[in-house]
Image (tube, rainbow, N blue to C red; front, side):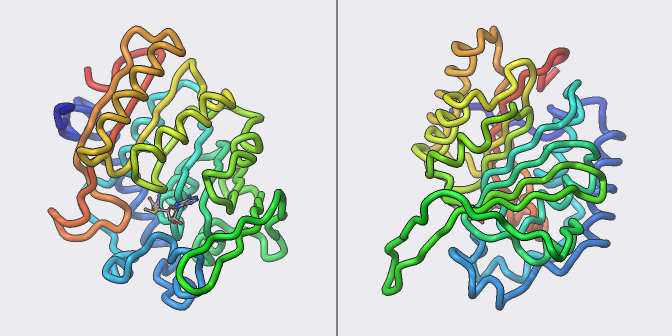
Length: 283
Ligand SMILES: C[S@@+](CC[C@H](N)C(=O)[O-])C[C@H]1O[C@@H](n2cnc3c(N)ncnc32)[C@H](O)[C@@H]1O
C-alpha cells in the first residue's frame, strides 16, 4: 500500500499561500450560482454523477480544504501557462472555481453530460454560444429506454480570458482524445469512472495522443480506493519509463471533495503524481 500523506506534508511552509487560494475559492463559491437543480438532474444522462443523498450538498461551502484548493496550489508551482483538463465535470463546481482563479489559461472539460446551466451562468457563457456536434452518435442500452449520445463541443472565453472547451462525450470514445490532440496538458484531474481499467485506459489515451506536457505536470485522480492503487503505481512507473523521469513524485491523501460537508464526511482519497522543474511534491 502507498503511504497515506497529510495535506501539510505537501504544502509545507506554504500555508499562507494555501490559505489565500482557499479564501479565493470560498469567495468564488459565495458569488457563484445555485448548483442544485433537481429538474436538470432528472433530465440528464446519468444525473451528472450526483446521487440523491449528495444533492443538497451541492451548495455546501466547506471551511476545510478541498481538492480544488489543492489542485490550484499544485498548479501554482508550475512555470508555464496552465493547460488544464478535467475528465468528469458533473455540474461543474470544481472547474468553476478554477476558471474564477486562472486567467489566460487553456481549459478543457469532458463529461457525458451537456454543460450544466449553473456552470453556463457562473462562467459567463454567451447566451448564443451553442455546442457544435461532431462524430457519430452512441447508443447506451441501460434499463428500458436506450439513451442516445451525440458528441459535441462548446467553446468560449471565460471572464478571465481563458479559452474553455467543454466536450460532451463518452470518454471511452477514441475520437475524443484525437480532438484534444492539439496541445499538451500540464494539469489533469481525472474524476469520471473510478475503476482501475478506466484510469488506465485514460492514461494510455493521454500518452498515445501525446497529451501530457512531459516537461512539468500535475496529475490528480479522485477516489483512489485500495483496488485502484495498483493502477496508480502502474501509471507512475510508466511515466518514469516513458518520459525518462528519475523520480516521479506520487502521493495518496485524504481530502474533501467539492460537495464538502461536515468534517469527516465527503472525504476522498486522491492520488497525485507530479513532475516539477524545480522542487518536489513533498520536500
Ligand atoms: C464525480 S463526478 C465529477 C465531479 C467533478 N469533477 C467535481 O469535482 O465537481 C463524475 C462525472 O463523470 C462523468 N462520467 C462518468 N463516466 C463517464 C464517461 N464514460 N464519459 C464521460 N463522462 C463520464 C459523470 O457524468 C459525472 O458527471
